[in-house]
Amino acid sequence: MLQPPSPIASVCVYCGSSGAADPQYLAAAADFGRLLADSGVRLIYGGGGVGLMGACARAAHDAGGKVLGVMPEFLRMREALYDEVETVVVATMHERKQIMFEQADGFAVFPGGIGTLEEVVELMSWRRLDLHRKPIVFFSPRGFWAPLFDLIDHTVQESMTPAAFKDTFCAVERVEDILPAMAAMGDPSAPAGAVPLLM
Image (cartoon, rainbow, N blue to C red; front, side, top):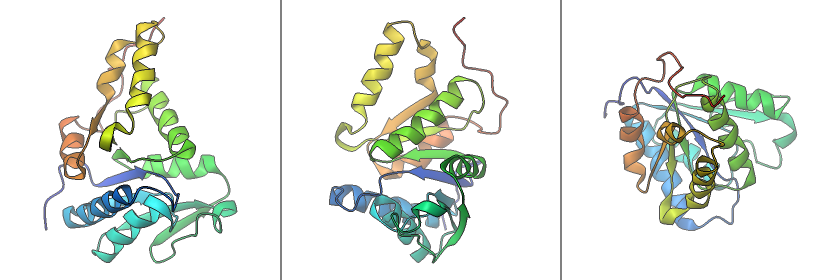
């Protein structure tokens, strides 16, 4: 078994739940699930059994990895709760996101839709407010997340976001580069306070 890049012991994966996703994205999510299992890193995810979520969780579980799903009650049917793994059922989306955040040492953002975008923007906002130092790594095959990065660049150019904020996340194009990128971003348990706030 490979050793996880310390101190990353649990990784939260944000990703799409659409079954119509590009098969290459689904395959990449499964590859990452297996990679997490092989590295001894626990997967934290939204609890669903469909789309990239399901592909990643099933692969991690089938490879003997530890998986924690967090699912709001009202989405149990829509996102097809994957009950083969440890799952926490909560009442609201806010509870789901809070538990996923607390349980993770780092975040991998895979292709997804508006739900994934909402989750990661909140996570980045918390980082912007110095509420955490956990690494955020985008898996961006074929430049999937480039429009988001362009928008962030625009906010920097317009002096709405400090330029240093762009150092709080990174993007890779291969799943095998995600964990090394997280390790390179530093200790997620270190005190916050490095991101300057505009006054």
